[in-house]
Each structure stands twice: as structure tokens, then as C-alpha cells.
Image (cartoon, rainbow, N blue to C red; front, side):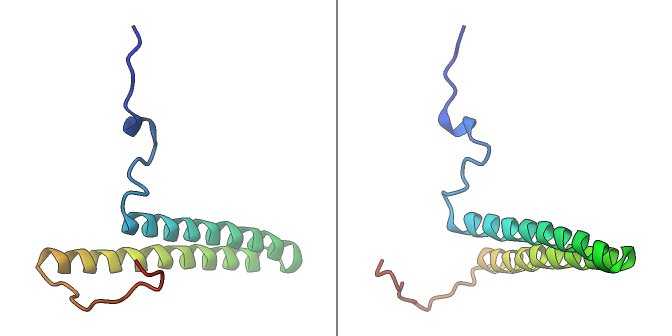
Length: 100
């Protein structure tokens, strides 16, 4: 017996594009992952040129950078959400450069 599955259950990240903030957080997370991959490739190149110690140091630096990117976004999101939960709102109207 075959049942139809709703489209919202088929996607791995169904609400990814429903909210601008969720999309922004996903984009920052993706950029942190890309930074980690690029840092790893750079560390491998550094091992070939300068040795294992320099490569390990470079890899640790790449990991720290990626973690700092993710933590800074998470902390900003937490502070903003907590402020919204307590009724603090930004009432300044900023016009969109796209005219919407």
C-alpha cells in the first residue's frame, strides 16, 4: 500500500528558505565550513613546504577561526532573540535599497 508523503516531510531542511534569519545563519555556517576546508588545504600545503609543526599550527588556526565565526553568529542571535522575548524592539525604519 503506497501512501503519499507531504512535500514538507521530504526535504531535509524544509523551512530553510521560509525565514531570512534561518537562511542567514545557514549561510554563515556554510562559510565557516568553507573556511575550515580552505584552512585544511592550506595546512596540507604548509606541511609540504615547512614541516609538520607549521602544518599543525596552521590547522589549529583554521579550526579556531571557523569556531569563532560560528560562535559570534550564535551569540548575536542569542542576544537578539532574548531582547525580542523581553519586548525590546528596534523601531527605527530603514528603507530597503531594493524598494520593497
